[in-house]
Length: 268
Ligand SMILES: Nc1ncnc2c1ncn2[C@@H]1O[C@H](COP(=O)(O)OP(=O)(O)OP(=O)(O)O)[C@@H](O)[C@H]1O
Ligand SMILES: [Mg+2]
Image (tube, rainbow, N blue to C red; front, side, top):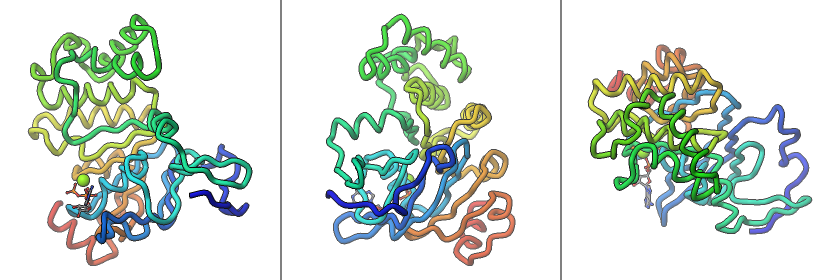
């Protein structure tokens, strides 16, 4: 698609821009509309928590932000740039695959299943993208990877393979791996829900540190304690729409909508 943007649709000056802005985002798979007009804003430095029942579209929305899915209608900006398009003058050009890959580098994603490379050690997993994608020198990438592993509390596990690490340790390696690309935005899709309960805390601690460092984070989670303590905003999604949003404390303790109340009564 090549289209024209009117002046008021083009966000002005990056400084005061939200990191993510969604306006009427729609996404369908075949006949099934999964996102039915999502409007939201994530400020830079914010920890933005996303909750909602299974199938409500949370993962799909993260995948749209990360250029893994194309939206069917609406507009989606990341750091002031329209996702999937390049603007030249007042014209929009669809990005080519190579350009999409470039954009995706700036966004770190952490999944429920850690998706580490099984044949690589922890430190090799963390070094891989900087070396292969960015062409960073191996020695430099190694040094950085070691400091990132230290940051997630795994300096002494650098030489371990994923199969030799607990789920919580693998997830922390996955976070270090995402950080190795110096993302401006981190997306977390239920990062602790595949973990044994006693391993959840260490991963949440790493995420808390990351939040304190000023990273912009969108976190799909069932950890309401984390959302309440660390989150700046909380959105409840159901059926492909944002039902309710606000400060986590307000939404969790005083939900306004029946659907939010009913969801929270089941998970809290
Ligand atoms: N690639 C796809 N093709 C077809 N349908 C899909 C695809 N991806 C997701 N869906 C459908 O979209 C809907 C929303 O899925 P999504 O994974 O975004 O939900 P979710 O809120 O993340 O759920 P959960 O809490 O279970 O992870 C579901 O009905 C799902 O089956
Ligand atoms: Mg999901």
